[in-house]
Length: 192
Image (tube, rainbow, N blue to C red):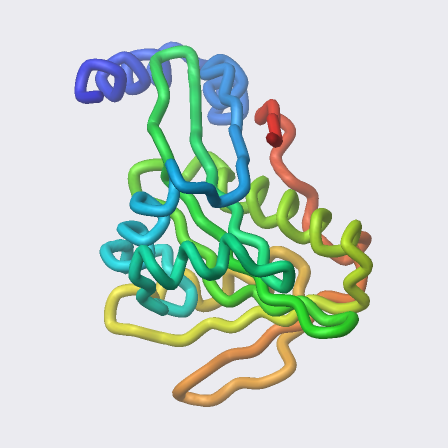
């Protein structure tokens, strides 16, 4: 992993722009549904990720397994692969459905993959899956902690409208995939 990160830094020095650098990484997002293999890592991400964890909800492996087995919940996990290697499972989204509404219960990314637009591409993928499922509106929350302040405006920057703001919570809503900010174009996305 350290060698791969060194090679990435060297490549960034020779790129004409940040976008050229991202394209030259040949990045792929590999997105899957929670399963017996991914449950331990998904639980670990909910337990240990602090900076890019919009609600800071912590879940045990048993709770994640229950979510994965529920018809009313989607659990997506994300791997980032580039020309230098596979970062493993570095992202998680837990989405709960009720009638025609979807609530993003948890949206988490490991800090080691931030800064390339991964978070925007993953959010766009998840929102499109929710709308494909027949969702009329998506509700998202930001629950502040001492460590996640950098994510306080993430949903607003992604195209969600803020509907609630207090010291304890910000709430956002999205009514159409057309409202989403455009996802970065330098990712190949594989699902399944």
